[in-house]
Image (cartoon, rainbow, N blue to C red; front, side, top):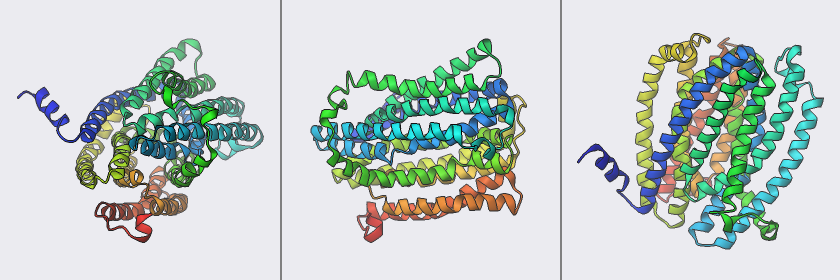
Length: 453
């Protein structure tokens, strides 16, 4: 038997759900790997085009505005679960009602939120808080307005991806994401021929690209393959909002907590270390986050698979799936250690000496990524079963201690960028202990009290 036949045999082994999951995960990994290569390509190109300071401003600005992509009070993730449950039970009418209600509520939220953000953008002295020099203020505020408008489009448009996830077709989402990144790379290559060193042009290209691709995807699929799920006012049922909100608000609280833990790092580095430290952290994170992206692939595929298995009482499949993911996690530990060892050579080849990244930053980011993956691994089961109340409380606690812990390591021990990352690591430790205990109880059907919520 040749290699191709062996791979094919492995892929086709197991239940229909398992085979579907394997195919989607494999295809998604291949596509995401291509996307990672593109991401690695446009990082040095962006740095070369903007310079360290402007690129640091852009990364900080993007991190701050991307926060608001999660202010859907969890309706998107609630939609994924409720839509997935309806399809698994053959309740097509409920499925379209959940889609229509979700889009209707989100449209109201985004109009209000976009207007508020635009007003705050031009009235608050937020550029002073980020230590942005006066010569850049006007350019930065103009760019931020463009990003906010693009964010509004993306906020609504990207919810079509939740339908793909719920239908266990996550590979499609990876293809669309890859096309988005490829489009942005082509624009980066073209920018120097249009205008040099333009923060507005660069930022607008990035923001609009990531907004328009999901918009076009939604227009196409809601007129073709997803036509029966196309949102309409006639199918909006405000009573269905309660179902989306009751589960969605928990996801929302967790998303905000996760953002506080992970997406504040660039802002904290810019405010308490230096703007030049932002690209250093971002480069190390982009290099090592390949494993985080792997677990994002597994999470996005196995989450709806666990919804389907849990609703059908297939706990044996859930146990086997969990054991496989744990094996993958241990394998990534070895690869992460090797990546840390060769990182100086990779940075030199990749960044051509434009950034000097201390090994301590790389080691701390590697630990942070591996610990995050450990937590995310168990979230696959918790999210799929909807038993996320305890998880929500743990994420809230982690978010509360994250920034104080980061500032403690920076102010008391003067650890700079490493101190910010150590704050992230410290905040994740309680979650790393609680999550596997709860998942074990669920899979053995011994969860009681807070463990069952």
